Image (cartoon, rainbow, N blue to C red):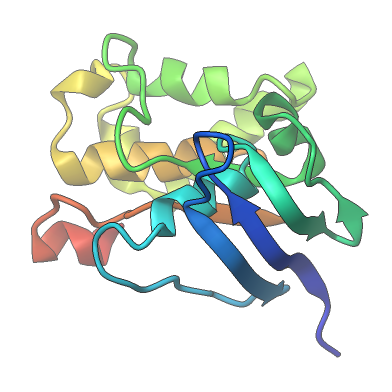
Length: 177
């Protein structure tokens, strides 16, 4: 039986009052399902994703996560609610080590859970394990994106939202991410 985890209905959102960028968007995501939003540059894909994540003001419609209305929830509460967001750029702390980037992402976890979750991410992304003490800013583009995804997955979100996860990556690294 399919279980809907994200239900976006008739969403309207934009950066300026009275100037909607997203108009009437609806998306449903079932557990375990991968949904991709496609469209030309400037169509509002990133704005839609950021609105779902609480980063762009929503002026109409609803966003339900596991049946709970999160339409008006601020961005900083989304991870606790079960939605993790990986922005297209500026999605790691470049001066911090790989391991410290992962530790920072564990802020909502119980301290005793942190070592196992970090080990889980290193198992999923062996390149990160080999670079654990390296400053994140010294990683390749593909490794940085892996780190950004690992930072989001480490909290076991119900829904993972990625904005342009392959932007700027070589085909080799797209497959790895």
